[in-house]
Amino acid sequence: MSNFGSVTNLLVGSSVICEDFIFNASAQTIWVREHIKRFLMVVNVTDGIVIYNPTTQSTKGTAQGDFLTLDYDTTNMDDLDELLVFCEVEADQSRIAEDLLADIVSRLDLLNERVEEAFETGI
Image (cartoon, rainbow, N blue to C red; front, side, top):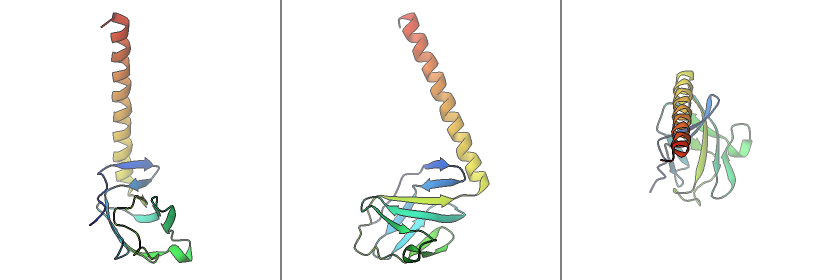
């Protein structure tokens, strides 16, 4: 059984929290199902443990594109544990995410204006 995250990303500069991934705890692997530049950090939120940090010897791993093999022993974890997978994306993906975020904010502003108009007119 694998952890299938949702299809969205939360933008944090050119870094994103990748939510579309498969975690295989027994194989100690994570596969992000989108193009990324590199893995930055992986946290097992369920257990409260950093399982990948390339700057710490005990939590390094081997990344090949969108596939990460962890040095950290995850064999006692569950494939369905909640993970935060921080990745760096190409600039054009950041731009797409920024445009999407701007569109969402614009639509929320418009919705807010319509709700205020409805209250003012008594609808």
